[in-house]
Structure formats: structure tokens, C-alpha cells
Image (cartoon, rainbow, N blue to C red; front, side):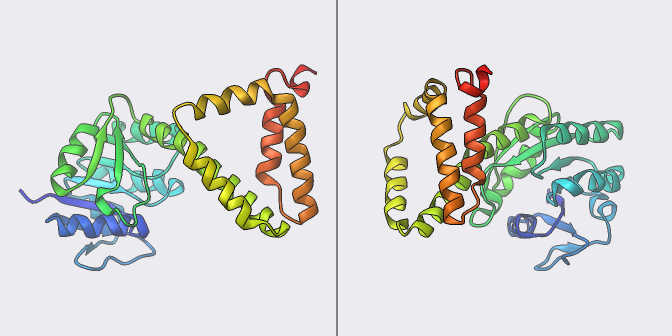
Length: 257
């Protein structure tokens, strides 16, 4: 049987998913107040119209629009999956709204950039409808893992990864910007590449234990680094945050005051 899937939000991620679902043989209905449906996706005039009669609704708009989209379309939905990058608390709220309407809900976290992957982007699903969503999407080519537990757990895993990965990216961007201002960008890029290449199974524990063990010295070091970035005319957002974080760790001078 041909699946009918509604995609709410036809931006970069939603548009790519809609095109791949269509290519896989699904009937795809789309709704986005700012982006018209194209390439064979059936354009609809509202969330409710897109969801009506669909086997599955994929909400791929934005965290700020997720609740409004659900409230607007849930009354006609058979199965709802929220793919937005939202907090675990927001996902639990969405699950509660869906439950009050008798609509099965899944929290689906997209674990890598959609461009370049499309429907095969790694996804993690939790919540009461996670297995049903996976069973609908896998035959169409989706790469979706189901984890036992309530809605919110998938979002939690994704955002914990984001704290690490996006935080590291921000630190690299700030450091490279400062190195460029200091006239040694190539040197720093080579140093960073070397450190990342040498990372192994001991790296995480070394970073964690070293931060606690040397909190006092590293707080002073990052204070000096923040001052240096100011002298270079580079905002020290990450360096200052690292200084303040280290100062709060047990064993640091500030934490003992």
C-alpha cells in the first residue's frame, strides 16, 4: 500500500525529506506558509489539510513553530512525528497535546545535517509511536533507530551531542579568528588538526579529569586568553565562558570562596 505522508515545513530539511519520500513512492503532502510545495509534492493550505487522511505527519518546521503546528493539525492526524530541534521539555509538551487528542506521537531527532543525506540522515526516535514511525519510514529508505522510552529522550541525546560538537565548533571558530588576527592562522589550524587526529579512547577522561585537577591554573590561563582576544579585537565569547566554567569547578579558587 502506498503511504501518504504530510510534511510540515518545506525549508532545507523538510524539502529534502519530502523529495526523497516522493522518489521512494510515497504520496507527499506539504504545507509551509512561506515556501510553496514543488517537484510533485501536493501543496495544501494548512496543517490540518496536509494532515487529513495522511498515514504520518512529519513536523519539520522549527522549534518555535512546533506547538502551533501540532495544535493546528493534530485534530486530523493519524500519527505525528516531531523532527524539530527542540528541548526535551518541549517534546514532552507536544506528546501531551497529541495524547489529549488521541494521536500517537514520536519524538524524532535528526542526528546529522540533512543536506547530502536526505531521508537517509541518521535519526533517533522515542515516544509511544516511535516504532510505528520507523516501520512506516524504513521501507522508504529512512535510517531511523528506535530507542525505548518516552518522548524527549531523543531530543536529549541530540542536544547533549550538540553541547559537545557545536561547542567545540564555536571554540575552533573563535580560536582561528584570533589566530588570523595574530598572523598565525596556518600554525593554529595545523595544531588543531593534529590534536583531533591524535584523539583516542583516553581523550575524554583526560579532558574531564584535567579540567577538575587543574581548575585554578586553567581559570587564570583562560582569563589571560580572554584578555588577549580583547587586545586582538576578537570577541572572547568562548574563552570567557571557559574561564567562568573553570572557575565554578570544585577545587578552583572561585569555587572555594
